[in-house]
Image: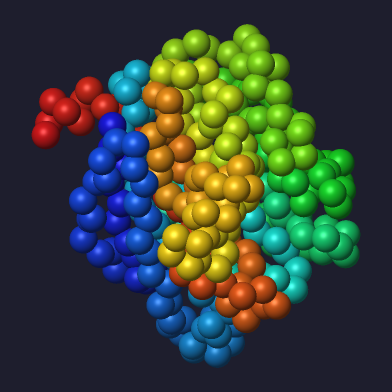
Amino acid sequence: MALRLARRRSATQTAEAASAPAPGSHRNHMKRNELRAIGPDPLRPEARLRWRDHFTLSENVLHVPGMHQEHDGLCIAHLSDIHVGQATSAVRIRRAVAEVNARNPDLVFLTGDYVTHSPKPLPRVIELLSGFSSPVFVVLGNHDHWVDAHYLRSGFERLGYTVLQNEHRVLHMRGAPVAVLGIDDGRTGRDDVERTFRGAPESGTRLVLTHAPPTIDKLPPNSNLVQFSGHTHGGQFVVRGLTEAIFRRAGQPYIQGHYHVRGNQLYVNMGLGFGFGGPYLRRGTYPEVAFFTLRHAEAASAHS
């Protein structure tokens, strides 16, 4: 039931796995991607990447009780808080898409905030986030609703991505159903958990996408659900003790990494956008692309 976390320093080297956190705790130690271009680079001609182009690759194993045995080993890629525009390097975004495609996950999850305040980057969102080779599921964030949610939904759907706003889809993968439940943004009060779950499977492999982490508190308890979220940017500028206190007062007790909450699991992505060469300071947190391997909890225990 615990999450096992490994860190990557490059696209070809993987560090040793870290020990799993205790249930009820969270842990997320990562380092920036030290990727260098080898030979001609279609995204940037220089052999060395700029600081603003860096991102972190995290590898995670999630032990999920109650999921279908057939989904043991299912791989998911998760990106969040892209914030296309001045806040995020376009090269970083395209490299993240390329890295996801290179690993060929079973599913790709995008959990909101593709823009910040201006509508100008809207066409670039669809351009930069195009080209995923795996099935993509999308939910929207608070900034997307503040800017133009309809444009983003239409654009993603033109790419063939599935956008979920208090909706769910049931896929058949490896001979068993996977329920993907997309809850709309809670920060702007658009979340409707009851509507999202209406008619969905009540057991088996159920994966929840929603932008704001506190939505985990609204999910049915003890349901073996896994929620993927973003929104916090990992705390953005982390000062130990102070950042946690500020986020708690703002109603955001889940800041980064993996949590066990009321019999369900939550992963808070640190977000690909904001910081490192842009106008927003970032400290103690890194732009992240997260990869997950799902393991059937009972099967994992039998082999341990």
